[in-house]
Image (cartoon, rainbow, N blue to C red; front, side, top):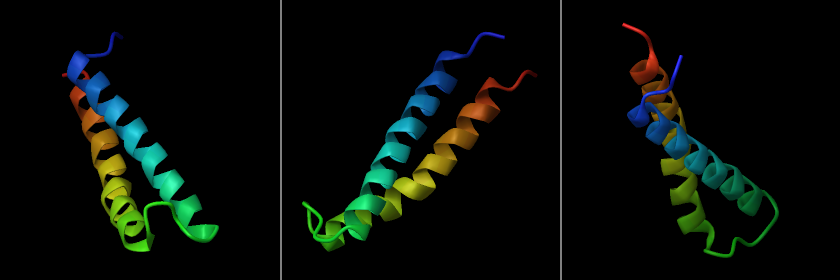
Length: 65
């Protein structure tokens, strides 16, 4: 089954946000983050749920009717 373009866009967004959240976790776990603690926490707080939402949307959009 081919992927719909909008589903591919949301899947790419989910990947990007997943990488951002993983990087934020490592930055916070291993000491002094480059962007500061509060900024890194904001990035983590926004990217973690954003990853889940984008992934669910990609799956729902690409689901056959």
